[in-house]
Image (cartoon, rainbow, N blue to C red; front, side, top):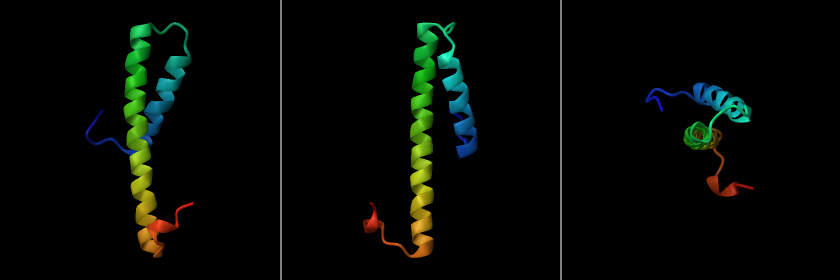
Length: 68
């Protein structure tokens, strides 16, 4: 994964990976590589969203213990 990855680029790449995995012509080996890349990108996106959510909470003065 690129060191300058942005959330938008990660989501775009995830969409490409999903499309590729849905293609029945992709080999098992390539599918596994794509799945691994997708898992890493998914984790990156999740962590990025968590950080953004925490920042919004901080800016709005919400307590982090008020999670649903």
